[in-house]
Image (cartoon, rainbow, N blue to C red; front, side, top):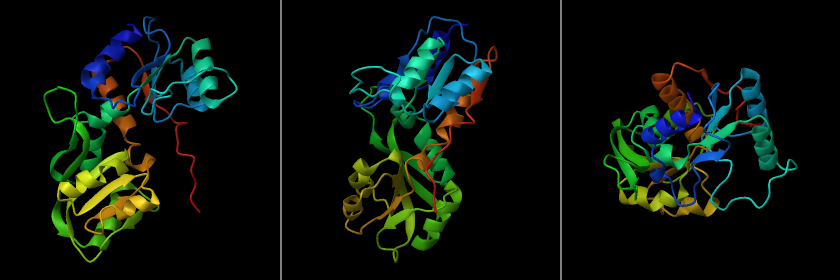
Length: 263
């Protein structure tokens, strides 16, 4: 079996047309026509992840975050992080492949998994995809909790369901929460969309200081962090591989961990 057989299957399940304009999903580097020896799934490409793939004999590394975005890179040298990863991968005939906003947007992808973790019901797409595919595809989701919750109880609920050490929030905590919008990763661009969707709370990551004020306290804004709203996407990719292929080993990286520490 060739690597291209795997990547074509992934692109059928998670179409590349769903990626955002800034994004660069799909092959980052390498020859997909070679026979596959194994696949390693990670959240972020790193030197340690490449070494891990080498140790397990895998020549396909699949990440959530792309190594190279549309703005590209001017040169590839082993002196910087991205160049070192690419040089090492190519030296060992590896293919690096990424699934970013296409798996965020697709029905059954990252944002649906996020909504399931928060126990949301009757979910809808928050921002529809421009890709002309049938189905409920797009970034973010909005749905309802099984029952109305006190705002502070909701914040503790989010911490528990998402396994958080901490979170940031702003808004009127005297108002109850029932309708919830969310977006995995950095979703500050969709604050107004969440407000227009009638959300009592919007859960996302990467909220800057002034972004908290954009809802004018009409909606609780909850920042759980970028990684914390997406890390489980690795499991979606791994499950898709295991369901389809049995002729090669597919594993989730053990070296791919968040290195930000809390005090």
